[in-house]
Image 1 (cartoon, rainbow, N blue to C red):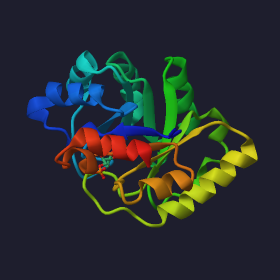
Image 2 (cartoon, protein in one colour):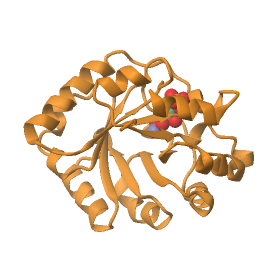
Image 3 (cartoon, protein in one colour):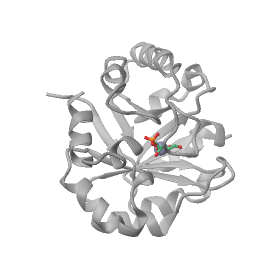
Amino acid sequence: MSTHLVAPSILAADFANLQRDVEMLNQSEGDWMHVDVMDGRFVPNISFGFPVLKAVKKYSKKFLDVHLMIVEPDKYIKEFVEAGADSITVHFEACPNLNRTIQFIKELGCKASVALNPHTTVASLEDIILDLDMVLIMSVNPGFGGQKFIQNTYKKLNDIKALKRRYNTELLIEVDGGVDINNAAKLVEAGANVLVAGSSVFSSPDPLAAIAALKEA
Ligand code: DX5
Ligand code: ZN
């Protein structure tokens, strides 16, 4: 039985048929739905915001994993929780007062997570790790779906696993970007607890089977 979670990313869904795709994910073996919010400032792309999250929430039966790729996330966190987020991930690189941001998310009753860009060292988390429910390791540069997986991710998984062991915490390790059936098992073996997958699920002729395969990896 697999112990890791799979979080299909709705960034790769068909937005003109979002209800259909959310209902497909409800029927799938996927554990969460990953929701990518981009502001055109932290990343060079704009995805969607509150109305789309609310629309997903209306039909979703899964845990909503909201990944904020935005500057000044503190301004919007409360509204994202009210719109249905079960977990909020902010970027280390976007939060000058990360401790305050994390406490704020938790006070709202939401799971709190920090994402690291490919160049940000895992050691940056040492003084916040005990406050986190999850760490998201970016395995591509944030901003777009369908990019090539960065191999250095395995080294970062080793580093975060060592930090996790040193502090004896249960935090989850999520990997996001370029995840597919070819690297999923290796990522789980390297310590990933949650696999995010966008294009490898939605560009598959059989997304339900693609999700099931990631779950079995
Ligand atoms: C990228 C996003 C990812 C994206 C992954 O900035 O954070 O969650 O949806 O897409 P794939 O799986 O296509 O790399
Ligand atoms: Zn993401």
